[in-house]
Length: 170
Image 1 (cartoon, rainbow, N blue to C red):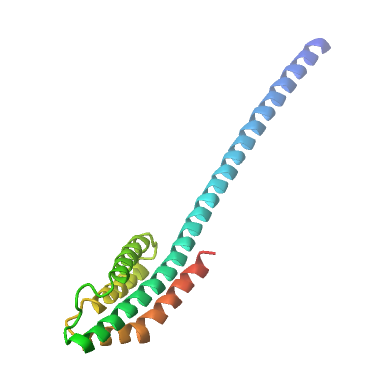
Image 2 (cartoon, rainbow, N blue to C red):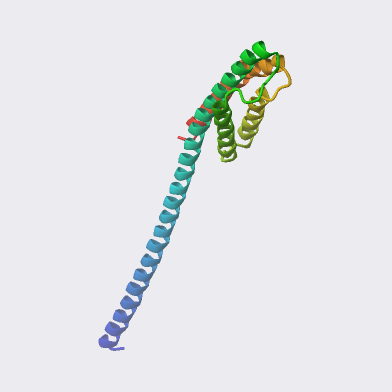
């Protein structure tokens, strides 16, 4: 073969190798870009979810504290009214506190359902039900017993558990 033919074949092979290298490099770059983009999207999604959970736990802490305070106030009003009238949980003692408590318990239900941790959600529901029982009890002693149990056992544990979840979602 003539040197001109070898030169042509060499140029043709060089062009094929160069084009193949360019195509493979572009493919690898695009594949890596897609992987990086997916990782970034997952990170953003997880970060957004953690932020949502964190905000929800903060709202839960505030709302449980508010609800506990309202339950205690209404219980105190019931005790005072009982001493005056001899009737337990006389209706219409303080309508504003009653409405605030209803709203606060409704908020607790909303926030409670947004929690990812199933076990904590169950514990929150039990405590919320106990809070509701204080002002729906049959007599003063039952109401006071439930309130005391909430103060001594449930409330501190609840705040500790919510704090733990907050730290886990940082």
